[in-house]
Length: 282
Image 1 (cartoon, rainbow, N blue to C red):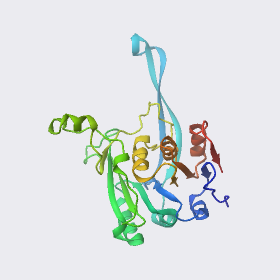
Image 2: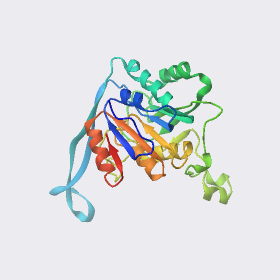
Image 3: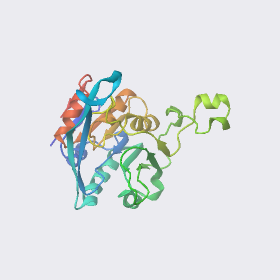
Image 4: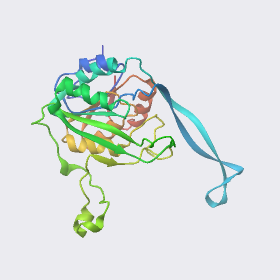
């Protein structure tokens, strides 16, 4: 059993099964609980890192220099569960228990499971606790020609107490108007508040933000969640932390964080990501 979390101590990354760790945390402690569980795609997932290497006789690149594209396998995880909801339901119950009375739970899924999750959460916590379904839309990756290509994720938002939750829309980074000519120049310069549909690119395979961890989420998505749903100094929890993006966003915004993951490769990625911060690894 992991040592009990100390809210007066440093930010923490726990290595291990998140269910017993969640059960060891005190109730009503976290302003934001973000869950990004495996999507139950029925297959093993593996990331690739793409690199350009100088080579004579390769493609012509910058300043006429030759290069070749190489691909190397990086981090993998298993996204196959025979009893997906038997796995997820007790973790949702614990996430709800540790959520503060004015807190918000964000459950990040895709089209395969989100409809079942909505029914389950309504039954577990009450339909009156449902606040939003956020659509995160992006435009990257392979495209099928047999149906409309799926290019979005779903994030369900639930309040522990529907008349008491904290939400500060003014704290969120604004975004450009899609039709700036329809608003005043002052409004166009200030930008608009986001709606429940978020257009945001995925993490570029060659970008500086990239850690090499599969399904890494952009800091911009987690920054928006943390900005709107917590105050400086509040604690944020991510029980499927992966590459640690929730912790990176929380630290950037002056929030505290607890991250959990049972994948040793994820823990290694987070050790590197937080090596310049005072983070305890347990």
